[in-house]
Length: 174
Image (cartoon, rainbow, N blue to C red; front, top):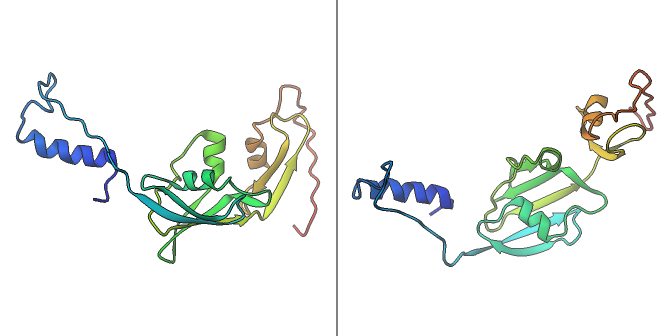
């Protein structure tokens, strides 16, 4: 109870290897495989700036990414960088989708429990990058990020870029 499939298999394998000595040998004659039959479901709330907020019934193996997917993802004003997961009234995780979208790194994805709330905040700061850049568009920025981070998000300069002439236009208080 409370283990994922890999952890459960490791625990079962460890227990059975004391009975079946060749289970973990280099040339085993005994094999072990586990599978999940009836998967229980959980209810999670996806709220805030998503396309379709509401309560969703998901597999007990579901993660924050799954909840965002079934809710249609962040809305036009929803943050990709500040998605908070609440469990029993406490913020247990804050997910930044840029790591996943830019690098394929899903380590910030968190498995959900019944009753969890996935809250998508509105974005706070947007920056537009244009010109000789690989992915010119708008990017959500955090307070501690710099122009160098923005260029990295945009995939760096294109081959035709003249890097000694970069112009920054700022609107707003900062």
